[in-house]
Length: 477
Ligand code: BES
Ligand code: ZN
Ligand code: ZN
Image 1 (cartoon, rainbow, N blue to C red):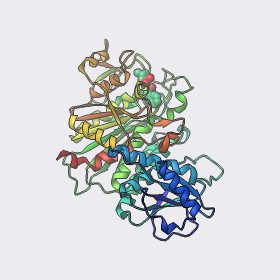
Image 2 (image 1 turned 30 degrees about the horizontal axis):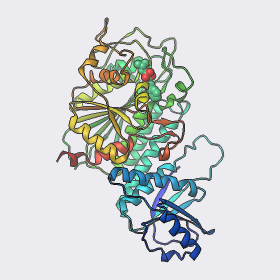
Image 3 (image 1 turned 90 degrees about the vertical axis):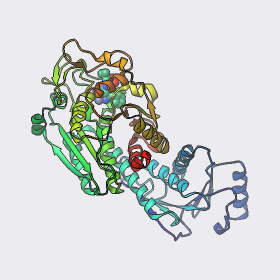
Image 4 (image 1 turned 180 degrees about the vertical axis):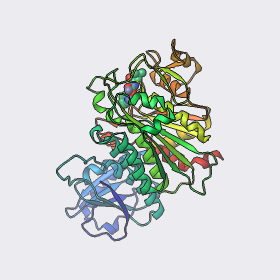
């Protein structure tokens, strides 16, 4: 399912209209009856931000966004207004958005909220669902290139949500890597997939240990977007956690409110695929590499066990004390692998800890960084612009001690507190470059509809990364 944005000038009498307006706009072209006009005037005087008029042959939705001082809050309010109107217009197939006299940005943000809120996951519905918008028409005063950029962003958020919503029964590690390849072909980035044999040759011990209990092989996927006019000489690397299902392994999870949503555990990987798609489609001039280690985490006679010692890709020996702390095992190998590219910056995204979700809920992303203060603060700016906000954790060296092991170099769990931070510290052990860690366990998935982020997978992280990469070189000045 896709929501199509299109520029159009002609409007027929039966077309539903979203009118993005001010209080003093000229409404004469709408030929409102005097009763309708009085109603509109009354509602606008009450400072309503949305006024609905049912003209029987069509609906009119007047959106009058209040102007907020903070431009980021203002745009977010516009997205939310777009999503609110959706409740009323999703019985029709299409709607026209007309800009009376507001800023182009406001209209685009309203469209964004409307289109993102319109997403539905229908793959496993055997009966056709006819509800929901198929097309959103925009008046042609909105620039063509901005409409196509927004279309690509919306498509990539949909791709991310579709991948995350797809259950484990239908998405194994191999399927995830093939999805990366397919979206590469569609958008223009290149893809290389390592199979189990290659992963064994490379001695990616973390990925292989987690995969030991599985009947399906692991994959390691490399995506690359390297445009000839790239403004960075050293690449930006995105690393995504690709646990296609997390049972916890032998340290088995309970079912309710835990294992039952663990198809979400590849959301970081899905974000990386979708961001690569968005930047390639929109032809951004930045050299970006995506790394995606993938497997499921399952118990079996052969599964890795608490107490095991695992030799990682970089030679570090890890004492595994909880097989449910598997994300860091596969990410560690990908982070060590990233060193060979001598990256300018590495950002990883992972549904890594319940601790992150408990700390800030689904309202944002837990972040921490090492040797990347400036880039971290730039990423926070992108977070405010897209309302995919970061909450930075302390990353003091005190936490390092919590990972000391009696029998190996490091253990894979910390103590009973600061779980998101000790998970980050474990990853830090495998980095030697400017690095930002994003724990998206809270916002990636929601059981109740969360505004335009929808129900189930939200795709949070994609718009954040796209914005950051788009502004990547601009920030440095
Ligand atoms: N995949 C989970 C984290 C998670 C929790 C994701 C909630 C999405 C929603 C991760 O692999 C995990 O199980 N982490 C453990 C770590 C612990 C064993 C140190 C956790 O957070 O409990
Ligand atoms: Zn786990
Ligand atoms: Zn996990």
